[in-house]
Image (cartoon, rainbow over all chains, first blue to last red; front, side, top):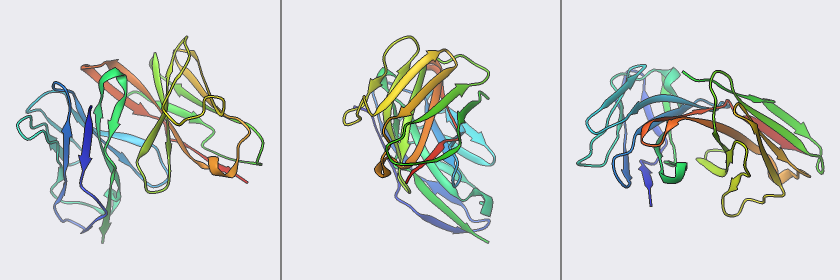
Length: 111
Length: 118
């Protein structure tokens, strides 16, 4: 079946540091891939997505490239801000319409 | 992007009462909505898939009679927690799917409903 593996958090960074949150997946075929962000006490917001291999999704300074050869969709940001502190989920829309979530990675950014 | 709303955003109730949570797609129609439960510092746990005009499909371990789901229209799904108990206290999140699987599919999430059962 489908699965998503995210790096374990929390990830603690200083402001303006470079961020990478790893995500790898197993799936049948070449599905779309998503990153969602959850701020404290809120629901999930779509951060970015990629619909096919080699696509790069980007939003709010975050980027992720859909790499078929390594089955990865790592999230990156060149310079994080305190306001980026949140939990980030890598999500794979699975077969039978059931999505598969990564465990979530908590990001803490200090001033 | 598409907007999904939930109501109420938070609710406190006494043990033994029932609580209804609404999930609405505001500017699109959703034939399929999902209900999740999230415990503190954990990922989302899928409870059930709500299909418009048919019975919901529940995940293993989720009590159908405890968590009643109704998808009355293409823009509304409701989750009723019946005879709530303190262990039902949690953060409940719904989502609606836009597009077809493999063809531009995207899920949009509601802001969540925090339930506290006393």
